[in-house]
Length: 107
Image (tube, rainbow, N blue to C red; front, side, top):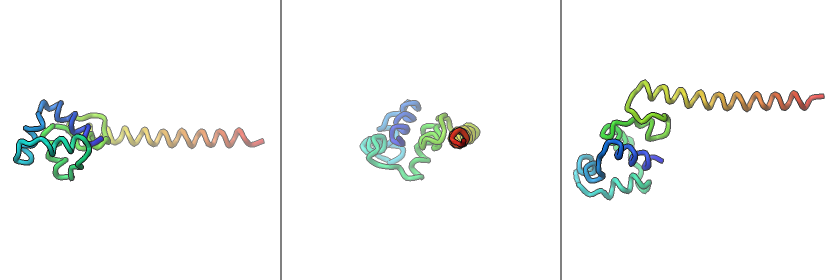
């Protein structure tokens, strides 16, 4: 997931692997970028932060916490709240269904 999102972000930023590798790693060889984007190599927090800044996307989007790729703190917080609300509603719905089934089972 992380590698695919980084590849998408690089494409959205209209950058080539070679260009990113040269700027980030000091070498134009795209092998390391390819390994990251194909999930063979996991970027550490510092590298992830550098890549997100370079691509103009949020780490929350790369990690799957938000649905909006923009590097925007407001959108990031909204995405986290949205995801949390969805989880909470799912738990609430399950609890309600359980209570209804228990009530229906009583004579």
